[in-house]
Image (tube, rainbow, N blue to C red):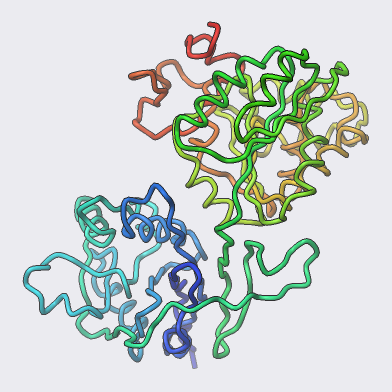
Length: 476
Protein backbone atom coordinates (compact mmCIF):
# COMPACT_ATOMS: atom_id res chain seq x y z
CA UNK A 1 0.00 0.00 0.00
CA UNK A 2 1.36 3.40 -0.98
CA UNK A 3 2.17 5.49 2.09
CA UNK A 4 1.45 9.24 1.88
CA UNK A 5 4.37 11.32 3.10
CA UNK A 6 3.64 14.09 5.59
CA UNK A 7 4.42 17.60 4.32
CA UNK A 8 7.45 19.26 5.92
CA UNK A 9 7.09 22.74 7.38
CA UNK A 10 9.55 25.15 9.02
CA UNK A 11 7.84 26.68 12.06
CA UNK A 12 9.41 29.94 13.28
CA UNK A 13 8.48 30.93 16.82
CA UNK A 14 9.46 34.52 17.60
CA UNK A 15 10.15 35.59 21.15
CA UNK A 16 11.26 38.71 22.99
CA UNK A 17 14.70 39.28 24.55
CA UNK A 18 15.19 37.86 28.03
CA UNK A 19 12.03 35.72 27.75
CA UNK A 20 11.28 32.15 26.87
CA UNK A 21 8.31 30.76 25.00
CA UNK A 22 5.69 29.28 27.30
CA UNK A 23 5.68 25.43 27.37
CA UNK A 24 2.00 25.41 26.34
CA UNK A 25 2.90 27.25 23.11
CA UNK A 26 5.72 24.81 22.33
CA UNK A 27 3.62 21.80 23.25
CA UNK A 28 0.86 22.88 20.86
CA UNK A 29 3.41 23.12 18.06
CA UNK A 30 5.08 19.82 18.82
CA UNK A 31 1.77 17.88 18.88
CA UNK A 32 0.53 19.08 15.48
CA UNK A 33 -0.66 16.07 13.50
CA UNK A 34 -0.24 15.36 9.80
CA UNK A 35 2.96 17.40 9.30
CA UNK A 36 6.69 17.03 9.87
CA UNK A 37 7.94 20.03 11.83
CA UNK A 38 11.33 21.74 12.02
CA UNK A 39 10.98 24.31 14.78
CA UNK A 40 13.17 27.43 14.86
CA UNK A 41 13.19 29.78 17.86
CA UNK A 42 14.26 33.30 17.01
CA UNK A 43 14.70 36.34 19.26
CA UNK A 44 13.58 39.77 18.04
CA UNK A 45 16.08 42.28 19.43
CA UNK A 46 15.07 45.97 19.49
CA UNK A 47 17.56 48.50 18.13
CA UNK A 48 17.93 52.12 19.17
CA UNK A 49 16.88 53.14 15.66
CA UNK A 50 13.53 51.30 15.88
CA UNK A 51 10.69 53.82 15.94
CA UNK A 52 8.42 51.31 17.70
CA UNK A 53 8.12 47.59 18.34
CA UNK A 54 6.65 46.98 14.86
CA UNK A 55 10.08 47.72 13.37
CA UNK A 56 11.68 45.13 15.67
CA UNK A 57 9.10 42.48 14.82
CA UNK A 58 9.35 43.12 11.06
CA UNK A 59 13.13 42.76 11.14
CA UNK A 60 12.89 39.54 13.17
CA UNK A 61 10.45 38.03 10.65
CA UNK A 62 12.69 39.07 7.75
CA UNK A 63 15.70 37.40 9.38
CA UNK A 64 13.82 34.25 10.36
CA UNK A 65 12.14 33.63 7.00
CA UNK A 66 15.46 32.25 5.73
CA UNK A 67 15.55 29.42 8.28
CA UNK A 68 15.10 25.91 6.88
CA UNK A 69 14.38 24.81 3.34
CA UNK A 70 10.91 23.28 3.27
CA UNK A 71 8.17 24.51 0.94
CA UNK A 72 6.13 25.95 3.86
CA UNK A 73 7.11 28.54 6.49
CA UNK A 74 4.86 29.01 9.52
CA UNK A 75 5.17 32.00 11.88
CA UNK A 76 3.94 31.58 15.44
CA UNK A 77 4.16 34.35 18.05
CA UNK A 78 5.35 33.47 21.54
CA UNK A 79 1.86 33.98 23.03
CA UNK A 80 -0.19 32.02 20.48
CA UNK A 81 -1.36 28.44 21.10
CA UNK A 82 -2.16 26.53 17.92
CA UNK A 83 -5.33 24.49 17.81
CA UNK A 84 -5.54 20.84 16.88
CA UNK A 85 -4.35 20.14 13.30
CA UNK A 86 -3.92 23.90 12.73
CA UNK A 87 -0.84 23.68 10.49
CA UNK A 88 -2.11 20.76 8.41
CA UNK A 89 -5.38 22.65 7.89
CA UNK A 90 -3.54 25.76 6.72
CA UNK A 91 -1.41 23.74 4.28
CA UNK A 92 -4.49 22.10 2.82
CA UNK A 93 -6.13 25.53 2.47
CA UNK A 94 -3.16 26.84 0.46
CA UNK A 95 -3.08 23.72 -1.69
CA UNK A 96 -6.75 24.21 -2.57
CA UNK A 97 -6.20 27.92 -3.31
CA UNK A 98 -3.12 28.36 -5.53
CA UNK A 99 -3.82 32.09 -5.89
CA UNK A 100 -2.94 32.60 -2.21
CA UNK A 101 0.58 33.31 -0.97
CA UNK A 102 -0.31 32.89 2.71
CA UNK A 103 -3.13 31.99 5.07
CA UNK A 104 -3.60 32.42 8.81
CA UNK A 105 -5.51 31.05 11.76
CA UNK A 106 -7.85 33.74 13.10
CA UNK A 107 -6.42 33.86 16.61
CA UNK A 108 -7.21 37.55 17.15
CA UNK A 109 -10.86 37.53 15.99
CA UNK A 110 -10.14 39.86 13.05
CA UNK A 111 -12.90 38.14 11.10
CA UNK A 112 -15.39 39.59 13.61
CA UNK A 113 -13.98 43.14 13.45
CA UNK A 114 -15.30 45.05 10.43
CA UNK A 115 -12.91 47.95 11.07
CA UNK A 116 -9.99 45.65 10.29
CA UNK A 117 -11.16 44.25 6.96
CA UNK A 118 -8.10 43.31 4.92
CA UNK A 119 -5.83 42.96 7.96
CA UNK A 120 -4.33 39.51 8.52
CA UNK A 121 -2.58 38.98 11.84
CA UNK A 122 0.82 37.28 11.57
CA UNK A 123 0.69 35.49 14.93
CA UNK A 124 -0.17 32.14 13.30
CA UNK A 125 0.41 32.47 9.56
CA UNK A 126 1.60 29.99 6.94
CA UNK A 127 3.52 31.18 3.85
CA UNK A 128 4.63 29.53 0.66
CA UNK A 129 8.43 29.75 0.77
CA UNK A 130 8.56 30.43 -2.96
CA UNK A 131 6.75 33.73 -2.38
CA UNK A 132 8.77 34.93 0.57
CA UNK A 133 11.79 35.88 -1.48
CA UNK A 134 9.70 38.36 -3.46
CA UNK A 135 8.83 40.72 -0.62
CA UNK A 136 10.39 42.13 2.55
CA UNK A 137 8.80 42.27 5.98
CA UNK A 138 8.67 45.93 6.96
CA UNK A 139 6.77 48.40 9.11
CA UNK A 140 6.05 52.12 9.05
CA UNK A 141 5.35 54.58 11.84
CA UNK A 142 1.62 54.16 11.25
CA UNK A 143 1.32 50.60 9.89
CA UNK A 144 2.33 47.40 11.66
CA UNK A 145 4.28 44.67 9.86
CA UNK A 146 1.03 42.70 9.38
CA UNK A 147 -0.65 45.50 7.42
CA UNK A 148 2.51 46.13 5.38
CA UNK A 149 2.84 42.45 4.47
CA UNK A 150 -0.81 42.28 3.40
CA UNK A 151 -0.48 45.40 1.26
CA UNK A 152 2.79 44.28 -0.35
CA UNK A 153 1.52 40.80 -1.16
CA UNK A 154 -1.67 42.13 -2.72
CA UNK A 155 0.33 44.59 -4.81
CA UNK A 156 2.12 41.51 -6.18
CA UNK A 157 -1.28 39.94 -6.99
CA UNK A 158 -0.53 37.35 -4.30
CA UNK A 159 -3.46 36.75 -1.97
CA UNK A 160 -3.51 36.36 1.78
CA UNK A 161 -6.55 35.50 3.92
CA UNK A 162 -7.73 33.82 7.09
CA UNK A 163 -8.63 30.15 7.11
CA UNK A 164 -11.89 29.77 9.05
CA UNK A 165 -11.23 26.13 9.86
CA UNK A 166 -7.80 26.64 11.47
CA UNK A 167 -7.95 27.59 15.13
CA UNK A 168 -5.48 29.27 17.50
CA UNK A 169 -5.73 31.30 20.69
CA UNK A 170 -3.77 33.72 22.83
CA UNK A 171 -2.12 32.20 25.87
CA UNK A 172 -3.65 34.10 28.78
CA UNK A 173 -0.81 33.54 31.22
CA UNK A 174 2.14 34.31 28.98
CA UNK A 175 4.61 36.55 30.82
CA UNK A 176 8.19 37.43 29.93
CA UNK A 177 10.52 35.38 32.08
CA UNK A 178 14.25 35.34 32.48
CA UNK A 179 16.00 32.88 30.18
CA UNK A 180 17.98 30.32 32.10
CA UNK A 181 21.53 30.05 30.74
CA UNK A 182 22.17 27.14 28.42
CA UNK A 183 25.35 25.23 29.17
CA UNK A 184 27.89 24.19 26.56
CA UNK A 185 31.21 22.39 26.58
CA UNK A 186 32.52 23.97 23.35
CA UNK A 187 35.85 25.79 23.97
CA UNK A 188 35.56 29.59 24.26
CA UNK A 189 31.74 29.44 24.42
CA UNK A 190 29.83 30.15 27.61
CA UNK A 191 26.31 31.02 28.69
CA UNK A 192 26.80 34.69 27.68
CA UNK A 193 27.78 33.81 24.12
CA UNK A 194 25.47 34.19 21.09
CA UNK A 195 24.99 30.72 19.67
CA UNK A 196 22.80 28.30 17.78
CA UNK A 197 21.54 25.67 20.20
CA UNK A 198 19.82 22.35 19.63
CA UNK A 199 17.26 21.30 22.20
CA UNK A 200 14.26 18.97 22.11
CA UNK A 201 10.67 19.66 23.08
CA UNK A 202 8.09 16.85 23.35
CA UNK A 203 10.12 14.63 20.97
CA UNK A 204 10.17 17.31 18.24
CA UNK A 205 13.52 18.81 17.27
CA UNK A 206 14.17 22.54 17.57
CA UNK A 207 16.83 23.10 14.94
CA UNK A 208 17.77 26.68 15.78
CA UNK A 209 17.51 28.93 18.79
CA UNK A 210 19.10 32.36 18.73
CA UNK A 211 20.05 33.29 22.28
CA UNK A 212 21.87 36.61 21.94
CA UNK A 213 23.72 38.64 24.50
CA UNK A 214 22.64 42.08 23.34
CA UNK A 215 24.44 43.93 26.10
CA UNK A 216 27.98 43.24 24.86
CA UNK A 217 29.15 46.36 23.06
CA UNK A 218 30.38 45.84 19.48
CA UNK A 219 33.91 46.86 18.57
CA UNK A 220 35.59 48.09 15.39
CA UNK A 221 39.12 47.37 14.19
CA UNK A 222 41.24 49.59 11.94
CA UNK A 223 44.81 49.47 10.61
CA UNK A 224 46.74 52.12 8.68
CA UNK A 225 50.13 53.79 8.23
CA UNK A 226 51.17 57.43 7.99
CA UNK A 227 49.75 57.89 4.50
CA UNK A 228 46.23 57.46 5.82
CA UNK A 229 46.30 59.30 9.14
CA UNK A 230 44.20 62.14 7.74
CA UNK A 231 41.75 59.76 6.12
CA UNK A 232 41.34 57.86 9.37
CA UNK A 233 40.44 61.07 11.21
CA UNK A 234 38.47 63.04 8.62
CA UNK A 235 36.87 60.27 6.62
CA UNK A 236 36.73 56.93 8.43
CA UNK A 237 36.17 58.14 11.97
CA UNK A 238 34.22 61.29 11.10
CA UNK A 239 31.60 59.57 8.93
CA UNK A 240 31.42 56.66 11.38
CA UNK A 241 30.47 58.99 14.24
CA UNK A 242 28.22 61.21 12.11
CA UNK A 243 25.76 58.33 11.82
CA UNK A 244 25.53 57.55 15.51
CA UNK A 245 28.14 54.79 15.63
CA UNK A 246 29.87 55.31 18.95
CA UNK A 247 31.48 51.89 19.21
CA UNK A 248 35.00 51.58 20.56
CA UNK A 249 37.61 51.63 17.77
CA UNK A 250 40.90 49.79 18.20
CA UNK A 251 43.30 51.38 15.72
CA UNK A 252 46.66 49.89 14.77
CA UNK A 253 48.86 52.67 13.38
CA UNK A 254 52.25 52.00 11.82
CA UNK A 255 55.16 54.44 11.79
CA UNK A 256 53.45 57.56 13.15
CA UNK A 257 55.27 60.78 13.93
CA UNK A 258 55.15 61.79 17.62
CA UNK A 259 52.76 64.65 16.84
CA UNK A 260 50.39 62.28 15.02
CA UNK A 261 50.59 59.77 17.82
CA UNK A 262 49.78 62.45 20.38
CA UNK A 263 46.81 63.75 18.40
CA UNK A 264 45.24 60.35 17.73
CA UNK A 265 45.70 59.22 21.31
CA UNK A 266 43.32 61.99 22.41
CA UNK A 267 40.46 60.86 20.16
CA UNK A 268 37.36 59.82 22.07
CA UNK A 269 36.61 56.07 22.20
CA UNK A 270 39.69 55.28 20.13
CA UNK A 271 42.35 52.93 21.48
CA UNK A 272 45.56 53.68 19.60
CA UNK A 273 48.06 50.85 19.26
CA UNK A 274 51.13 52.48 17.79
CA UNK A 275 53.69 50.23 16.11
CA UNK A 276 56.88 51.00 14.17
CA UNK A 277 56.90 50.82 10.39
CA UNK A 278 58.59 47.63 9.12
CA UNK A 279 57.93 47.80 5.38
CA UNK A 280 54.95 45.38 5.48
CA UNK A 281 51.66 46.71 4.12
CA UNK A 282 48.79 47.24 6.66
CA UNK A 283 46.47 44.72 4.90
CA UNK A 284 49.06 42.03 5.72
CA UNK A 285 50.09 43.21 9.19
CA UNK A 286 46.53 43.63 10.40
CA UNK A 287 45.81 39.89 10.26
CA UNK A 288 48.19 39.09 13.11
CA UNK A 289 47.59 42.36 14.96
CA UNK A 290 43.81 41.97 14.87
CA UNK A 291 44.17 38.38 16.13
CA UNK A 292 46.12 39.68 19.12
CA UNK A 293 43.40 42.25 19.87
CA UNK A 294 40.31 40.02 19.68
CA UNK A 295 41.97 37.21 21.66
CA UNK A 296 41.50 39.34 24.80
CA UNK A 297 37.83 40.20 24.21
CA UNK A 298 34.65 38.41 25.23
CA UNK A 299 34.18 35.66 22.59
CA UNK A 300 30.61 36.90 21.93
CA UNK A 301 31.68 40.48 21.13
CA UNK A 302 30.42 41.59 17.69
CA UNK A 303 33.46 42.78 15.70
CA UNK A 304 33.97 44.34 12.26
CA UNK A 305 36.82 45.95 10.38
CA UNK A 306 37.01 48.00 7.19
CA UNK A 307 39.83 49.41 5.10
CA UNK A 308 40.68 52.86 6.44
CA UNK A 309 41.87 54.63 3.29
CA UNK A 310 38.79 54.29 1.12
CA UNK A 311 35.71 53.68 3.27
CA UNK A 312 32.82 56.13 3.71
CA UNK A 313 30.10 55.41 6.29
CA UNK A 314 26.54 56.49 5.45
CA UNK A 315 24.38 54.77 8.04
CA UNK A 316 23.97 53.27 11.50
CA UNK A 317 25.66 49.88 11.96
CA UNK A 318 22.93 48.51 14.24
CA UNK A 319 21.58 46.06 11.67
CA UNK A 320 25.09 44.76 10.95
CA UNK A 321 25.64 44.00 14.64
CA UNK A 322 22.29 42.24 14.71
CA UNK A 323 23.36 40.02 11.80
CA UNK A 324 26.50 39.06 13.70
CA UNK A 325 24.52 38.28 16.86
CA UNK A 326 22.05 36.14 14.92
CA UNK A 327 24.84 34.19 13.18
CA UNK A 328 27.59 34.12 15.82
CA UNK A 329 29.59 31.26 14.34
CA UNK A 330 29.77 32.67 10.83
CA UNK A 331 32.28 35.03 9.26
CA UNK A 332 30.40 37.72 7.30
CA UNK A 333 31.90 38.83 3.99
CA UNK A 334 30.93 40.58 0.74
CA UNK A 335 31.79 39.60 -2.82
CA UNK A 336 33.28 42.04 -5.29
CA UNK A 337 31.19 43.00 -8.36
CA UNK A 338 33.39 40.90 -10.66
CA UNK A 339 34.71 37.38 -10.23
CA UNK A 340 36.54 35.01 -12.52
CA UNK A 341 37.23 35.37 -15.47
CA UNK A 342 36.48 39.12 -15.46
CA UNK A 343 38.71 39.98 -12.49
CA UNK A 344 42.36 39.88 -13.59
CA UNK A 345 43.83 39.66 -10.09
CA UNK A 346 42.39 36.18 -9.53
CA UNK A 347 44.79 34.36 -11.88
CA UNK A 348 47.59 36.83 -11.10
CA UNK A 349 47.48 36.29 -7.35
CA UNK A 350 46.68 32.58 -7.32
CA UNK A 351 49.00 31.42 -10.12
CA UNK A 352 51.97 33.22 -8.53
CA UNK A 353 51.94 30.80 -5.56
CA UNK A 354 55.21 28.85 -5.62
CA UNK A 355 53.96 25.38 -4.64
CA UNK A 356 52.36 23.77 -7.72
CA UNK A 357 49.67 21.78 -5.89
CA UNK A 358 48.68 24.73 -3.70
CA UNK A 359 48.70 27.01 -6.74
CA UNK A 360 46.26 24.71 -8.51
CA UNK A 361 43.98 24.39 -5.46
CA UNK A 362 43.86 28.15 -4.91
CA UNK A 363 43.07 28.89 -8.53
CA UNK A 364 40.30 26.29 -8.65
CA UNK A 365 38.71 27.69 -5.49
CA UNK A 366 38.76 31.27 -6.74
CA UNK A 367 37.59 30.30 -10.21
CA UNK A 368 34.54 28.43 -8.89
CA UNK A 369 33.45 30.80 -6.11
CA UNK A 370 32.57 34.48 -5.64
CA UNK A 371 35.64 36.66 -5.18
CA UNK A 372 35.40 38.12 -1.68
CA UNK A 373 36.66 41.60 -0.86
CA UNK A 374 38.97 41.55 2.16
CA UNK A 375 38.43 45.24 2.92
CA UNK A 376 35.70 44.14 5.31
CA UNK A 377 34.77 41.21 7.52
CA UNK A 378 32.51 40.87 10.55
CA UNK A 379 31.75 38.25 13.17
CA UNK A 380 31.99 37.54 16.85
CA UNK A 381 35.41 37.88 18.46
CA UNK A 382 35.73 34.09 18.55
CA UNK A 383 34.86 33.72 14.86
CA UNK A 384 37.18 36.55 13.85
CA UNK A 385 40.02 35.10 15.92
CA UNK A 386 39.75 31.80 14.08
CA UNK A 387 39.86 33.58 10.74
CA UNK A 388 42.78 35.88 11.61
CA UNK A 389 44.89 33.03 12.96
CA UNK A 390 44.26 30.75 10.00
CA UNK A 391 44.74 33.49 7.40
CA UNK A 392 48.00 34.48 9.09
CA UNK A 393 49.23 30.90 8.86
CA UNK A 394 48.40 30.80 5.15
CA UNK A 395 50.88 33.61 4.46
CA UNK A 396 53.61 31.68 6.26
CA UNK A 397 52.88 28.31 4.62
CA UNK A 398 53.04 26.83 1.10
CA UNK A 399 49.33 27.63 0.67
CA UNK A 400 50.15 31.27 -0.18
CA UNK A 401 53.94 31.53 -0.24
CA UNK A 402 55.00 33.59 -3.25
CA UNK A 403 51.61 35.09 -4.08
CA UNK A 404 51.75 38.59 -5.51
CA UNK A 405 48.70 39.57 -3.43
CA UNK A 406 49.94 42.47 -1.32
CA UNK A 407 47.23 42.08 1.31
CA UNK A 408 44.87 39.61 2.95
CA UNK A 409 42.52 39.06 0.00
CA UNK A 410 43.79 35.60 -0.84
CA UNK A 411 43.72 34.64 2.84
CA UNK A 412 40.06 35.59 3.21
CA UNK A 413 39.02 33.76 0.04
CA UNK A 414 40.91 30.58 0.89
CA UNK A 415 39.61 30.58 4.46
CA UNK A 416 35.98 30.90 3.35
CA UNK A 417 35.96 28.74 0.24
CA UNK A 418 37.90 25.84 1.76
CA UNK A 419 34.98 25.41 4.18
CA UNK A 420 31.79 27.16 2.97
CA UNK A 421 29.97 26.30 6.21
CA UNK A 422 31.94 28.86 8.22
CA UNK A 423 31.06 32.02 6.30
CA UNK A 424 27.98 33.73 4.91
CA UNK A 425 27.49 36.33 2.23
CA UNK A 426 26.12 39.48 3.84
CA UNK A 427 24.18 42.29 2.15
CA UNK A 428 26.67 44.19 -0.06
CA UNK A 429 25.49 47.49 1.40
CA UNK A 430 27.84 46.91 4.35
CA UNK A 431 30.88 46.96 2.05
CA UNK A 432 29.62 48.36 -1.24
CA UNK A 433 32.57 48.05 -3.63
CA UNK A 434 32.41 50.92 -6.14
CA UNK A 435 35.18 49.70 -8.44
CA UNK A 436 34.37 47.36 -11.35
CA UNK A 437 30.71 48.30 -11.53
CA UNK A 438 29.16 49.25 -14.89
CA UNK A 439 29.21 52.90 -15.87
CA UNK A 440 26.31 54.74 -14.22
CA UNK A 441 25.70 52.02 -11.62
CA UNK A 442 26.86 54.36 -8.86
CA UNK A 443 25.69 57.94 -8.42
CA UNK A 444 26.16 60.78 -5.93
CA UNK A 445 23.02 62.52 -4.81
CA UNK A 446 23.10 65.25 -2.16
CA UNK A 447 26.57 64.12 -1.14
CA UNK A 448 25.47 60.50 -0.67
CA UNK A 449 26.57 57.52 -2.73
CA UNK A 450 23.62 55.52 -4.07
CA UNK A 451 23.11 52.94 -6.77
CA UNK A 452 20.87 53.52 -9.75
CA UNK A 453 18.36 50.90 -8.59
CA UNK A 454 17.70 52.89 -5.45
CA UNK A 455 19.20 50.27 -3.15
CA UNK A 456 20.42 51.49 0.24
CA UNK A 457 24.21 51.80 0.63
CA UNK A 458 25.36 51.88 4.25
CA UNK A 459 29.15 51.66 3.84
CA UNK A 460 30.83 52.72 0.60
CA UNK A 461 34.13 51.08 -0.25
CA UNK A 462 36.06 52.99 -2.88
CA UNK A 463 38.37 50.11 -3.72
CA UNK A 464 41.06 50.80 -6.35
CA UNK A 465 40.88 54.52 -5.45
CA UNK A 466 37.42 54.85 -6.99
CA UNK A 467 36.11 57.19 -4.27
CA UNK A 468 39.00 59.54 -4.80
CA UNK A 469 37.96 59.84 -8.42
CA UNK A 470 34.55 60.97 -7.16
CA UNK A 471 36.25 63.71 -5.11
CA UNK A 472 34.54 62.54 -1.92
CA UNK A 473 37.63 61.95 0.19
CA UNK A 474 39.58 64.55 2.19
CA UNK A 475 42.41 66.17 0.30
CA UNK A 476 40.98 65.42 -3.15
